[in-house]
Length: 242
Image 1 (tube, rainbow, N blue to C red):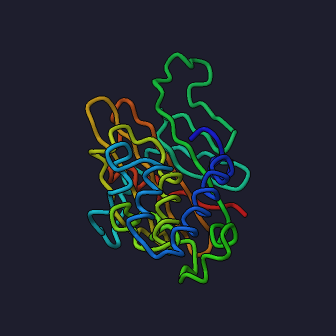
Image 2 (cartoon, rainbow, N blue to C red; image 1 turned 90 degrees about the vertical axis):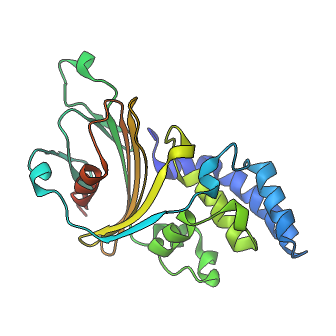
């Protein structure tokens, strides 16, 4: 996720539009099986992209954060966002890259955190017609995206969110073993998708703050230094500056 998330959406938006036009055509005939077949042809099936048939397995509710771990972090500031990060991680915000080891980049083991921030109602503004289908804010948009399931597509709205899910979730290595959870901490409501292994950990954290908008935190942790508790602690420290 080295490129800005908005650019990723722009890159694939034409594909999504083409798929969506096809979805509308099939929807006219009211046949869910045709919708599913069309999506599989355009995106891929659940064998190829397992995340399309996965949904959050657990709602952790409101959780506390590990304050002792937070005290070990260092602050990174960008034009409109700040966050606390473990010292050994490089940080990329949009196209701005910061190294912790500025003089000894050979010490960089590929541990990188990618960040994105968008204003309140970003997705509702990007797809205004979605309000007609009962999606009133970015958190509802995020929820519908994470719970989208190719195997249960019944109408055009279901199909739209499967398309969004295929674009929205970054590389998490072995998708067959990805875990998906829903969690709240402080004023932030989040979905965290993650994969833990001896060869490295991956975390995809998408969260919405009522007053600060949407944030995405994608973590590549090749040395497996982080776990879910630590990632929640890191995510709790992200804030908009404007």
